[in-house]
Amino acid sequence: MKHTPMAARLILAAAAICVGLGTAACTGDAKTADSAAGTTAAGEAKTDKTDPSATDGPVATGAPAPSSVPAAASEPPVVLPALPKGAPKGFPVVSGGKINPVAGSEGSFVVVGEGAEKILRFYREALPKAGYKITADTEKSVDFDGNSTKGTVAIVGDSVSVTFKA
Figure 1 (cartoon, one colour):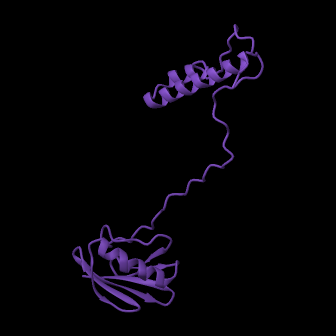
Figure 2 (cartoon, rainbow, N blue to C red; figure 1 turned 135 degrees about the vertical axis):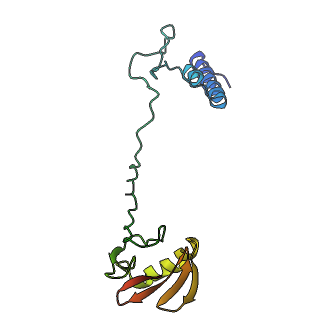
Figure 3 (cartoon, rainbow, N blue to C red; figure 1 turned 45 degrees about the horizontal axis):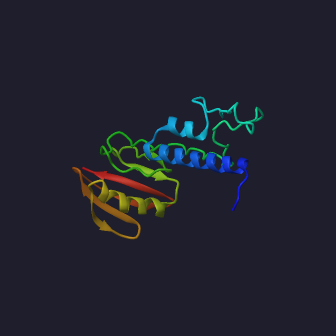
């Protein structure tokens, strides 16, 4: 296959760019990649004034093309409700629920929201992970013991009561 001198130059230039970019990718040398791609340190395309095919028109800058994929919205941090005074330090807290202290019962609280069954299911899984042993488990309640405290997590109407025993 016979190529015109211009086509041969373009093929040779493309091959040189590919070799330069491949070398830069292997060595991590961005300057080599820019040089091989025919760009300056500022990322602007070089033009060879001795090459009659070089133009002074619009040139590639080496900047990445804008993405058509929108940036993912960052999720807000999970803010867990605070336990009432007297609750064991490090006791598991369900996210998304509202905690109301139980008057006259040191550290005990009621969790509302999220669905009572879902909250009880959370405590069935979270208590053992937090160092508590489940000592009794029924359809509507879980008794626990550990970390120097005993207690019960029970469904009461539409909420869940967490009661600590001395």
